[in-house]
Image (tube, rainbow over all chains, first blue to last red; front, side, top):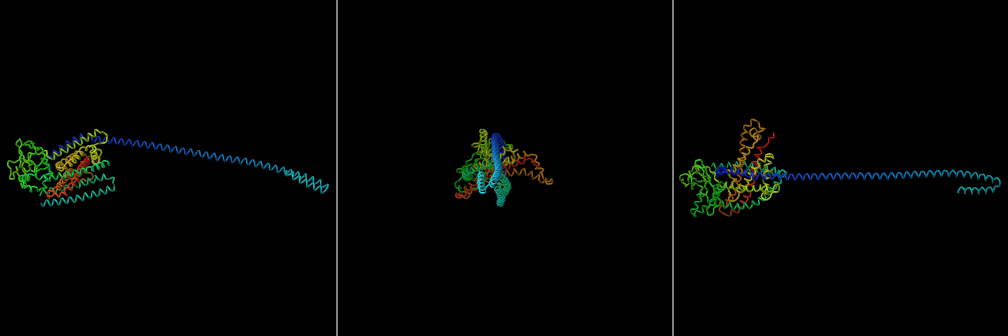
Length: 168
Length: 72
Length: 389
C-alpha cells in the first residue's frame, strides 16, 4: 500500500503534459466559443427583456395618460353639468320670484283701485243720503205744517222711496 | 500488528470527530435554510466550504494513520 | 442564478436514474474483477497453474492485495481472468536513463509477471524486470527466490531504476477521458456556433447548464465579475476533467485515475501556480504584512501564512485522492466479502450495499469535482481580491 501515497514520476509527467494540452485545446476550441455564445445569448435575452420592459412602461404611461384624460374629461363634464343645473335653477327661481312680484304688484294695484272705488262710493252714498235726508226733512216739515195724518203717511212713503232709492 | 490496531482506532476517532463537525454544519445549514429559504444558495456554498475544511483536517489525520501503519 | 440551480437539480435527478443502472453493472463487473485478480498475481497464480490439486487453495483471496492492485497504477490494463488466464490490454513501457538511453516495448513482454522473475531484454541489450509495478534494471543472476533483483531486509529491491514514463493504465484512462472531453465540448462549441443566439439543443443543452453552473455558482461569486473570465478555462477544464474521470473510474475494469495521488498532486500544483502567479499586491501584503496584525506578531504570522500557501493545495490533493480511493476501497471491500466468506449468500447483503455505495460514489464524483473547483476558485479569488482597507 505504500505506493498509494507516493506519486509516480511518470504519471506526473503525463498528467501535466496531457492536462496542459487539453487545457489549451479546450480553451481554444470549446470554452471560448461556448462562453462567448452564452454571453451573446444572455445579452440578447437581456436586450429583449429590456425592450419588453420599456414597451410595458410605455404602455403603462399611455394607459395612465388615457386615464388622466378620461378623468379630466369627466371632471369637466361634471363641472359643466353642475353649472348648467345651477343656471337652470337660478333661472327658475328668478322667474318665480319675478312672477310672484308681478302678481303681488298687480294685486296691490287692484286693491288700491278697489279701495278708491269703495271710498268714492261711500262718499257719494254719504252725500246722496245727506241730500235725501235733507229732502225728506224738507218734505216732512212741509206736510207737518198742513195735516198731521197725511203728513205722517207722506213721510212714510218718502222714507220708503228713499230706502228704495238708497237700495238702488 | 499493534500499529495497525492503533491506526484503526485513530481512524475511528477521526471519523467520530469529522462526523460531529459535519453533522453540526449540516444541522445549522438546514436550520438556516429553513429560516431563510431565499439565502439557501449562499448557505449551501458556505456549508460545503466548511465541510470541505473539516474533511481536509480529517483526511490529514487519516494520512497520518496510514503513515503510522507503514512505519510499523 | 436560481434557474441554473434548478436546472442542475433536475439534471442530477436524471443522473441518479442512470446511477442505479450503472452501479448495478459495476457491482457485477467489480465482482468478476476481484475474482480474477488473485490469479494474475505473480507466483501465487503461477503455482496454481501448475497443478489443479492446489486449485482449492488458490481460491483464497487476499482482499488487500486485490484492492491494492485495483487502486494503484499498472503497466498493463488488466481487465479479467478467464480460466486462470489473465486478459489485459498491453500498454507501451517507456524507460529512460542517461547511461542506457531510451527503451520502448510492450508491457506484455513481462508476461504478467510482477515479482522480477521475467527479464525483458531489449535490442540495445538493456535488461529490465518488474517488481510490484516498478521497473528495475535486472541483476545478472537470479536470487534465491528466482527473481533477478537484489532485496534488502524489508524485501524492497535495491537495483537501480530507469526513469519510468510508461503509458500506464492510468495514462491510458486519462487519454480516454480527455478524448471524451474533447469530443463532447468541441461538439458543444459547434452546436453553440451553429445555433448562434438560439436555445441549446441535444448534447449542448446537457452541458451548457453545467458550464453556466461553473461560471455562475463557482467562478463569479468567489472570484468576482471583474476577474473571473481569466480563470474560466482552467476552472472548467479542471471541473470536467475530475468529474468525467471520476465517473469513468466507476466503470467496470476502469483504473482509479482521480484516486491516484500523482494526478491530484499535479492538479493541485496547477492551482498553486495559478494562484501565486496571479497574486496581486494585496495578496502578498496579506501574507507578508497582514493588515491589522501588530508588528511583533509578524515573525510568527509570516511563516504561518507562507505554510498556508502550500497547505491549501495540499489539502486539495489529499481530499480528492482520499475520497475517490476510499470510495473504491469500500466498494471493493463490500464485494470482496463474498470471496472472503466463499459464500454466494453474502452477496444478498453485499451486492445491494455495493449498489448503494456506487450510487453514493456517483454523487461523490460530482461533489469532489465541484469542491475542487470551488476551492480553487476561492484561492484565485483571494489572489486577485482588491484591498478594501
